[in-house]
Length: 286
Image (cartoon, rainbow, N blue to C red):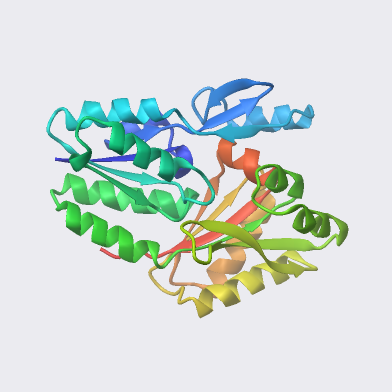
């Protein structure tokens, strides 16, 4: 049988994942030199309270050994593993998983997939992979679904505090300074790196109003083929007001899409900052 592994970038807790038959490895959030397992022993509310107290969070990966142990546990029973990781370029999880594969007892039974995304679209990919695995679909069928679906994904981020992205190396100091000085609404877009594996955040637009920001993103989504049958995920860091505004706007622009609002996890808040909102779209192609 094929078992699906992912990490807390799906926004699933380990309890939720276990109920679905999914294996997850939590990302790590670090505050005051103390490490917390993402969504396990720290909540988004608790992290936001720490940030209000001027604490500075960061993130780190789970140990390679933790992944090796999980690979050995599953493959030792004769099962195969498909491990779907958060986008390389935004995290080192993909490279860490490749290292774990090489070190485990049965590397020939482990396949590591770079989701090239995170949050809502990553959850949609993992959910479909899990459904297919539980329906006895082959590894090649699951990998084909992942490859074709990943190619449809598009992601935007509206940060409220550039210092979080700057600390995490997601934007340059110049970009962070410009975003703060202009007092406009910045929109970041995740793009593939030229001549490299992985992706990174780049400036997409600076807008005077939130509605204009939504319009710019929706226009780009239309150019990229977002239409009926797509999922549009609106994820937020304790910013339901803007998330609901986004829902209303994108529902009107894409009436045939399924639009879902989700709260972001502590590990994402540590990178994107309080009040950030992400707009992401993906089509799952079986």
